[in-house]
Image (cartoon, rainbow, N blue to C red; front, side, top):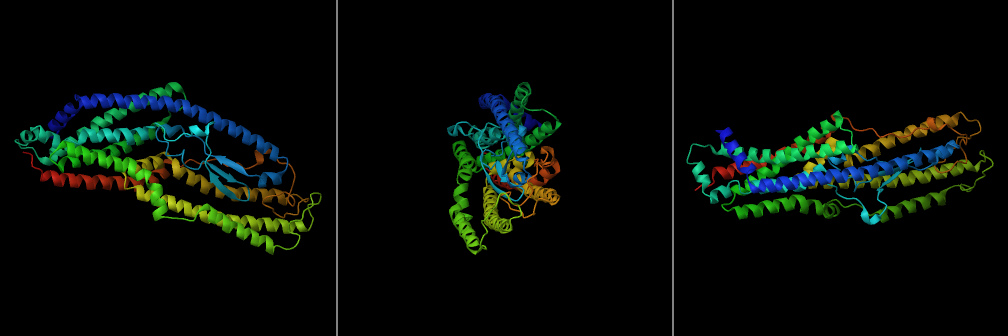
Length: 464
């Protein structure tokens, strides 16, 4: 019985005009997105390569004085991801530059690759964007009249004039919709993979193919959410035009309202101090340190490393750095918490759930930034210890560590290949699966609640 109903529904969808039009649109969007990615990724990769070369040249100059190696502010730039064609994880909006030295991890910022600030790259036509914006909408267009439409055409009563269980009929509708949308997505992804292979910008290795397979499974779960809601909208009313209106309202809520009001809710529900307020407190603390510093704390003698007041200067500079670090780190922690609480609030949207699942599985976005931020703090401590070990071997150094200047530590040259350099550690698949668990549970619960509501209303639906 189920197989017969499933094949019947599948044939009805595949031969319909809405499938033909939707299929053409999906194929065109996947093609355009892949061509666009191949071009933009090449530019991003070239810019990143130029930056890496310039950074190595700067380190080579600093190597003439090991203290300058330790005190210089280095910038770690997050490299472009090959799997960003699957999902860009909103990385164009997130910080991608972290500034650090051997003494401190200072701050983070957003670095744009565009030569024209008016052409800053925002959302790209990644697979994730296509599924969340286009296929979610198309899914609702296939599901909104699945029940109410047949009632209007008087075919629903004909079906149930036979001994057809309602749960079997409902499940056949759901699975056929998921299958049709899944076929569109699969064809689009295959075309995209062919374009990427021809362009040579992405290595289609086993890791990338595993990520592709994982994305397909996640997207099918996401499509199921919208298919179930479309069916729900179709069983709560007798008229398909009302069902369509309900479905459109749900899509607007998930795709437009929640994402575009997240900043408002963040400021309203999870407010934090402004950067100006924090800067004022930080400056007041610095002024207080300078006022209470011993006389001669700003004295220097570039010709004599053992000049006694260099120790006072180093201590004062360290106190200033530690004071700034205390205020900055506390403020960054508040920013992280505000961002994470806002993300939890936006889980009301299935599209947000889908985005966060992709981010976790692909190891990108906020999780990638947060991992680099934490890893850089661990690296900074190792970097400083390396510098202290080298400095301890220099009899010409008084070993008074100044985080900003080279007056009172070793000035000997060091080989470039001996200088510790931070390397990003990509999260393993095991870690990614751990990250994705909570978001997957949220989506499964959403599907379960919607399906139970759909089944409840359908069992009481008048098919006449």
